[in-house]
Structure formats: structure tokens, C-alpha cells
Length: 286
Image (cartoon, rainbow, N blue to C red):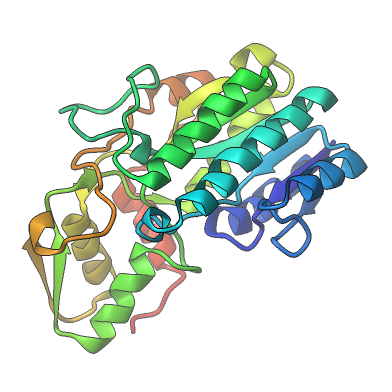
């Protein structure tokens, strides 16, 4: 089986390249070899490689910057997956694509299920929703995996940002009124392996799923767990979102219900605290 992976240098892509390798011939690409901003390149690469599975781990992830670069965000997050889905349909390939909790507005008081109506608050969320709609409309076999608050021991993410700030300050002020489920890139990769393995011989299992670590917390709670887990000195002070205004509006509550994924693919994710502990073992205190 030949697998085409985009975004090999991203958090999730880096983990996927290692996790999916046992499935067959894995061809991992980055922006230099597959630029998602170039439709002709996307079509050419896919048609040359003729993969049985396309895993799209690339994307525009700068949530605040997307507000000032909406066309670019839409081209990378919306238009490129649409082209990949068209090519997957032509080849009869399975397309795996990652979406976000930010397709929701955060007004629901309980975890979101796959059938809840999306209502993104920012350009990034709108671009991810556009990709979902394009993939479903294409009619290709697909797995759309919505996840949330992704982090890892490498790249740019909340975990590493907190550790950098801890080096420079004895006090960290972190938003406490936005709630979600921190999820490691490694967990996303392992869940992808479980889903792909089962979905390839069973096309009826394809579709839209939510997958995150279990449980929920605020950004403040996440930061506290990071600092405590590494024994980093300094207080973590809870603040309201209004005290730390951002360019892009974010949902106050974006926990995803993962029951459908767990049931369908017989995959049991760890609690977010246990997931975090595994990642922290790879790090040393600042």
C-alpha cells in the first residue's frame, strides 16, 4: 500500500511519518515537494504517485494571523483539501484530513458531537469548515478527524510557549475561561493508524469523527499541569479572556465528544493528563 503524507515537518505530520510507516510505502512531503498553495503541483504529485491513501497533515495553523490573511488561509485549509479530495475520488483512494474544534462557536454547554451544526467564530475555523464541506461534496472515501488543542515536544505550540515564558518570568498569566481537551500530536497519529487500519477494508466506516484525549480543562489548567509536571518554579495566574485580547475570537467551550470514534475503531485514548505526562517525559526542565 502506498501512502502520501503531506506536512511531514508539522507536529502531527512528524508523528504520522513514524506511526504510519508499518502500513506500507510511505511517501512524506513538505512544502518544498508538495506546496498546498499550488493547485497544479497538488494534482501533478498525486497523479504521479497514485497513492491508495492520502493523509493531509499540512495546513495553515496561525489562528490570529489568519484574520489578516484570509485568502491564504482559505487556499491552504479549504481549497487544497478540495483538490486532494477530487484526486482521491479519481484514484479511488482514501483521504484522511484533520479539522478542528474551532468549527464550533463554543455556546454549547456540553461536548460537541459530529452532528452538531458548526458556526466558526474566526477565519481559521471557517477555512477548516470549508475543507470539510468540500471533502464530503467530492464523494471520495474519507476520514475527517476533528481534534483540539494539539501540542507536542517539537514545533510551535502552547506547551513549548509556556516553557519558554517560564524561563523569563516567575509569574504566568493564562486564560482560564476557555475550555477544551489538550491532545498530543502522538495521540492523533496513533488514532489515525487505528482508523485507517479499520477503514481501508471497511468503506462503511469512513466519515467524520472527533478524536481528542479524554477529559477537559482550561488553558490555565493546562499551563498549571505543564509547569507542575516539569517542576518549573513560578505561579500560574488565571485571567479572563478579556484581559488577554486576541485578534481572532475563540470558542469558550470546545470539548469534542469522542464516543463515536472510540466505538467505531475500538480505540481508547488516555486522559489528557496522562497524555501530557508522556510528552513531558521527552522534555527537560528549562
